[in-house]
Length: 177
Image (cartoon, rainbow, N blue to C red; front, side):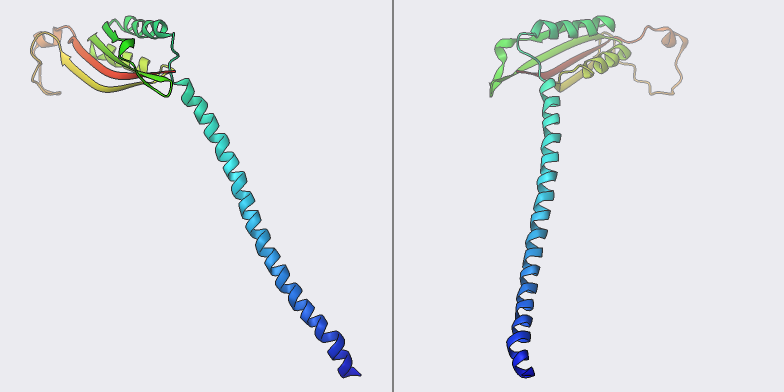
């Protein structure tokens, strides 16, 4: 009887326990996989939100079509604040259009002291919109450039000279939507 009990009850129960254990292990692996995928989905959702906020920032750096006068006025105002002579070459007819957006070349010619030019550059760099300067040329206007190195002794006459007037030409691109 004990052999029959062992054969009819215990062996099938042990076999069922073994099958249940393997099923539980398979289910645990599936759940772990789903959990890691769920974490990836949550992480991806966070990344999408971060990208959306970055896209909004990128959209703000584009200039708006129809606001060309305000753009030119901003450049003129910055030059005036810094006592610079400025010539702006900006031609809408040279626009290169891509996917509904325009890329318009810009050339700025400035004349003034180095300090004023650098302050001007800092101001236009702080504008809300983006100008991609591709070429910058800086030259001294008028007389030949002084060949002395910093720290070399200068005569009193050289010390009394007015600050050098520099010319700067900037070529770049502006981006419009």
